[in-house]
Image 1 (spheres, each protein chain N blue to C red):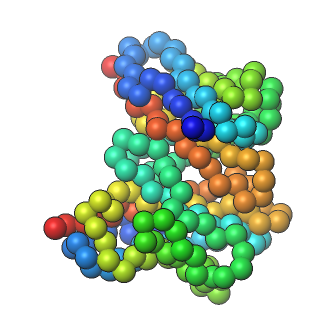
Image 2 (tube, each protein chain N blue to C red):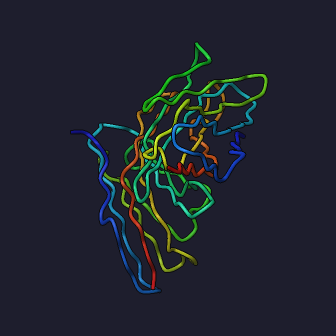
Length: 115
Length: 113
């Protein structure tokens, strides 16, 4: 079985400051990892994904994430946030070979950007 | 443009009534999913379907039913057996590939009075 833990339920930050949203996973097999963003009263949209290859993954809106296999983490970062980044962020894990292809989602982290 | 549509966006029903939420996709995806979202609980899987005329229960299927008669459509019925149906419901789809990136609809907010 696979699971995802998002360590912070809420992250407040000032505009133009850097931010890191933390995600740890557990899985007995190789994984694919995803970050999604959800704006209020909308569906989720993909920010970025790690399938294989380079452990540093760049996504949309200036976000990036680093896959760390030894620490089983996939933290999301942005060097300078904007007010429009205020949203809910979800980390998700699905299989590589042998595990469940159905993604498992974390509980979400609410990013609140203050002016 | 390809995408997923859910209707209606807001839905109000009286307790004890069944209600059906619509989900349609024109992405030619094989797999479709229904999730329930409650504050602070993330997304919980209700049902999923990998192919037409086949579907599987997710983690919280009790009180819900689905059908998959067409590739494009995956309606969800919230029955009167669902104890606490008020929630935000999200439909998603994906290609049947191992990387399994999901595409989400805009959601339906169901309120049971």
